[in-house]
Image 1 (cartoon, one colour):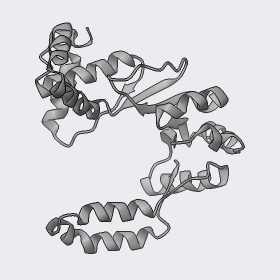
Image 2 (tube, one colour):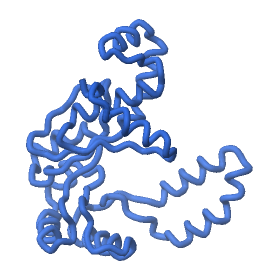
Image 3 (cartoon, helix red, strand yellow):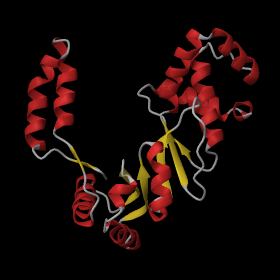
Image 4 (cartoon, helix red, strand yellow):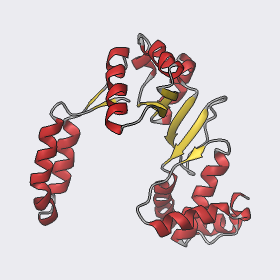
Amino acid sequence: YGILPPARAGLLGVARSVVRPAVARLPGVRKRVAQAATGLTSKASFFAAEARRSLERSLRELGIDAIDVWLLHEATAEDLDDSDLLPFLQDAKRRGLIGAFGVGGDRSHLTALCQRHPEYCRVLQFGWSVLERNIEFPGAFLFHYRAVAQAVAVRKLFAHRPTLCQRWSDKVEVDLADPKALVATVLAAALAANPEGIVLFSSRVPDHIRANVKAVGEPSARE
């Protein structure tokens, strides 16, 4: 919860169906359509009334009775300073409408938020990179994401600094110049940094999913 749906969602759907053939034919159209769609959304207010409408709509449209983890998207400490959201979230949890709640967003904002509003921070989701120093959030259940995407940044770094690639490869005894090996190693590092939590990655290729799961399951991967 945190990104409001477009006020004219139905019209946007019609527009997309009309422009889809053009997207396939004309360069640049896809980007402009995405920018237009983004412009029709806005950030939530993080108050109970709006959150209640959002939760009810999500449950109804998903056709389910409960949501396992309900995260506040990109909420900051300032967003929650004068909010009446916490009692609503606690009540929704008591009623079984949500299993847990927390915050997802840029980790640079999460430290201040957890200091000022620790009651919202029992579950946290944020992007993780092997190139950045770990930040500890004691007592919180963590979701890490973007680890695989960050492998692209690592590859670019290695392209400019091949001696670093060799040094890292020697250290972990894996040829990190191999893109598949690099992705598997970065995923294993994300798991090692978050052993009690969950690491998310996205792929539309079943073979890639199976290969990644197998790679991080190898006994030597975590080591």
